[in-house]
Image: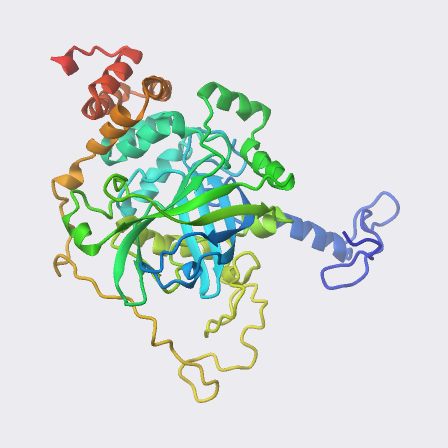
Length: 492
């Protein structure tokens, strides 16, 4: 840290009295002409930028991706071009529903967003610690998030709204089951997996396209917290996950994650039992095994939290050549929602901030806007085409075409398999969870549903229990008994 520097105003003028206001006589009043007092208070009033609507509480770290396996047959992206290649990255971990001051150990999904600073531009892989999500259509997103926030009358968290919405949207069952299981509260960010969750595409040098899902598996081993331990930490160390990450990296205990992919051909996508772009469903590993790609290492804590973590801005629309989109409806909605949120929260020129800036040259005709500080194109033309700068559009970056099932535009009804919201949760509960994990999940559901109130309590509980029975009779029976519900109507 540099020392022995004079204190100045933001315009560079020396400040003689940093702690004392200019007054009339010794006791005041304060004079309006004390311009540094005005500057100091005005800037203090503006220290906070709008809080993220979701993922408000988080932490971040810099690191690197090292490629360990050849996947060039699937993609021409330079980030994957050779074994041993290293790419700098920034990761932001977060909870989802809570405010910036909320506890790190809430039962809540965890955000796991990565920004890769590649030589072709920044690639953002925005995901969570779960492979699925609560909903499959972006039009539902604002309503869903409203249920996770505060009641508009009481300003308290509202279990009634949460379970009312989930019970009316059975597509949420898969994610809710994960959330209510032992996996629902990770033991910090080092001991959890991450997922790109959405279906993306990869394009190779022959311009062939395959669909892909990204996974990043913790190499520290999975660890989770019990309800009791998580509740204790809420009171004793609400910043538990952030502190754990900062302390580990500061000691040189760098967290590592294996980057892996699942690959599905276009032909397989057409023949898949479910809609392969449905965010509420997984691709079974038995049919689409995980393929090794590389290793993520986190090795540097930002020097200033606000500058890097709070101003970090991610968007799944930030892609590089060789990585593309898919018909995933939630992904399509987020392509707009994420950059729009960042422009509102941070400003039109958020991409020019150090944590978001591409470290390689960028070139376009965007101009002006609040806080433009990068030269703003100087005196070059601000339009294209023009007769002066010789800039050109890249014509060798092509995305392969793919056929849609029809050219009809409508609000389509879902097919029968798309309405199967029970098979995958059933497999998770009955075939993957151990007996103890099953009992823990049932107990967590009972604890959460017990908080449902209002005149609609019985209706909401009965509707949700019907869903649990359809997932697994054992699950439905356990929850019903725990909530003292007469089960005769379910077991006839």
